[in-house]
Length: 341
Image 1 (cartoon, one colour):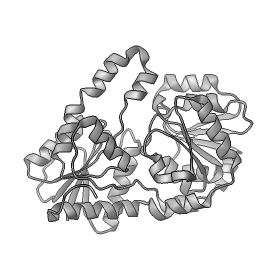
Image 2 (cartoon, one colour):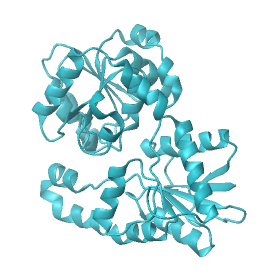
Image 3 (cartoon, one colour):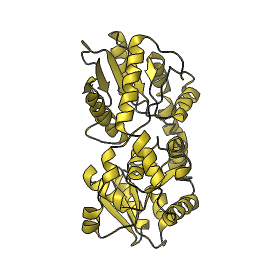
């Protein structure tokens, strides 16, 4: 079996969660013996490939062009949607521009619909994602849920180097790019004056938003910028709680990594995190600072939950994701694709 993975042109230049998903999927598939390549081209030569696997229905223009190329060349298409509806986020964050922004978001729905209708199979990260695609687009392809994963190395992360370097431990951590969708400003407001340190790790996507966060922060807030994965693992191991109060997560790769490393988890209640963590995490309303505060305080005061780390290590690894993905490819190629299980 030979497979071509495809995604946005700047996947490696502007890394985000989809970058991790694509690269980790590629590596784990190769470890299983699947012959897999990656290309960001819109119309690559597909000679010799059995399946084209596309990522991302959110930023869909490139995905749609890649899909059309595959269909034109007679190749079956599998799609990891990485999809969530942006409309609530737009309405909350940009009330003065909501008309143009909502129009911009919705104008891509015909392209999303075309990709879904062309797919031999969708591989959403959760059932809720599949239901949302059906609701928003009014169409659906056969699908198999392939949960996101984390590298098992996070289960053995050592906090020593991080604590020695930054002189902070037992803190609240938010590991995400600094941007309005990740909602760090609400987290700053929720944690002022609580008496424990709050650490932010991640590149600055929006410098104006970053300045707003810094302006409202107090001495308990620490912005450490971008870090390579090895250092982030140490931060997870040193932290007591990891928080993603985002406007949506599916489910948030940082939450999986931090949970594997032993953190208590606070997640947004928008998205798919409940399908992963169930009652082992705390959930907050991203629109409500008091909700974020209550969840963070409860998680910080609670004992660590080793059963959550065990759950993630056993069920949500890239090896598990790759095995489910390879099985989906085989199903497509065998012509056994039917309705969702």
